Image (cartoon, rainbow, N blue to C red):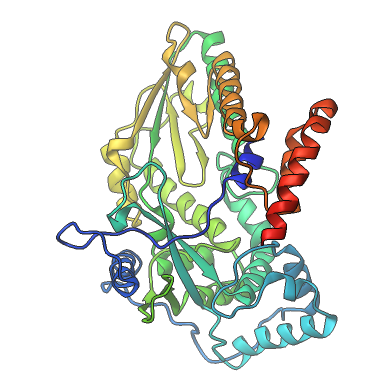
Length: 433
């Protein structure tokens, strides 16, 4: 239902709406490009940090060369219908390639490290979309999306497959983000379990939830490499060094005739499957630092998880609220910054009821409250399709739109009543196109 509503109402990409220093809306695409590019350059480039070099030491072959089989496995993992990067190569083109393509890509990847040949794949095109619910005009209310080259994505997937076993051993069980067989459901279930346990044992549990500002975009790449050297093999460190180096970001604005590329030297390039895993490894190291600065757990606290995390969404669990100032100072040493105003404090106890209405990753902790809210959301989603159900303008242009509606109309008789009207409208729309 929710997916169908989203697909039927999706809009074409439009240039971000930004204002100049006088508060006037900027119309000229080149001026929009300048404002947006300069803003994100200030976020992704730090002149006080030395850029990461693609290669370190003399050229030499990887101890474990990248094979054509690894390349094929990575290409099969690429997702369909994703925008390509600056190279213009779509995922479909590589996914349906032959064995000769796999072998050639393996040669290119291996030569990169054996001969220190920079293949120039670390170029990303940055587009920006408005953050939902935020006022338009300021570039700080834009969300950056980086479109990476597809070949770079393939190398990232190869690296992820290689480091996954070591990463899983290093990561804490409390981290549920970007891990196999883990999801937001683990976090929600943990909070519900804590609530039930608190009620059974008649104790008060304090949960301090912190919000980090643009966490993926602020981490220190060199510090990350130092952490990785203690976890994974030299080959994979070399590959990740290459992927983090010389990251050129080229901001894109429709109809702009100029270009404003810049080199990003902070954060991990978002847009591939490796970067989130690198982030949670980095965060795990930072959380260790926090534990050394807060009081040791009591006997009861040892029976509870110290924290519950999904990516950068971290909740500290204890019998008293943690001191946010101490957490803030510890994280800042790792270039991670806490948005203090968004800190969430929740008390779980037998008598308290407020926690039932507390939302964690889209779900309310109270079971009855969560079910009632989901029923309300379902009704809202259904009402958004009011024009389609009872008449009015139909915006069906493709057979895919019909498929979305078919997934909604599970009731056979209802589908039969709608079929004639929908098909006529769809055929008329397609004939006009």
